[in-house]
Image (tube, rainbow, N blue to C red; front, side, top):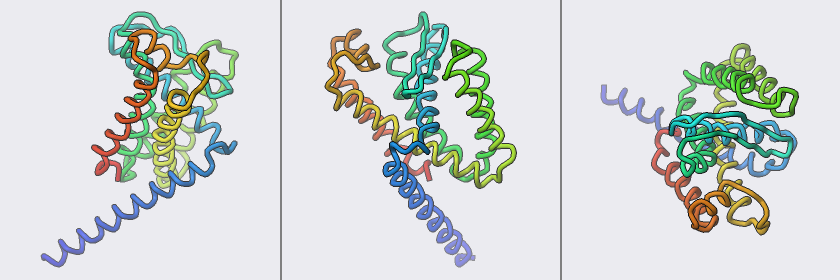
Length: 231
């Protein structure tokens, strides 16, 4: 009996080691192919997560979302009224980080991967129809086409494909958020560029660099605290 428990523990440890290795391999592959056209539609998907983070915080703090815009240069904009502005401005990068963490946690064992993939696809189509404007725009067509494609992936593809998609997207979402913070806030020399951090600087008087560092530290701390749940 004890031998069976030991074998079970050994198998579980091997699976955990394999999961950690796969996540590290995914992160390395994504980093090496960062500017590759292959990753372009997925980087846009993370921008969508970013804007959804703003939208979620606006709604949770009593505001109302008017419209969302996505552009070909991987830019995004959310227009909302009401709500707690300070929290809404912080919601973008946190949305990217939390989306990535959620994808990794929920797809860890693979049982939820197919349903998670389908839900993500349908959510994108719903958001496109209800929020993304104008209708005849790059952002609208991207969200509809990507949403339908992701839904079809979840319905038709083997569960292992949905699992790999969710894991890869989770890693990309976390990495994109941290790299975006680095490029737009910590390493940016363009004073005229408007970012969440510069708007927070205007609202609070605290330098945008401090906001960028805060988001980075929070993201890394979140990954550390949830490290056992990711694999």
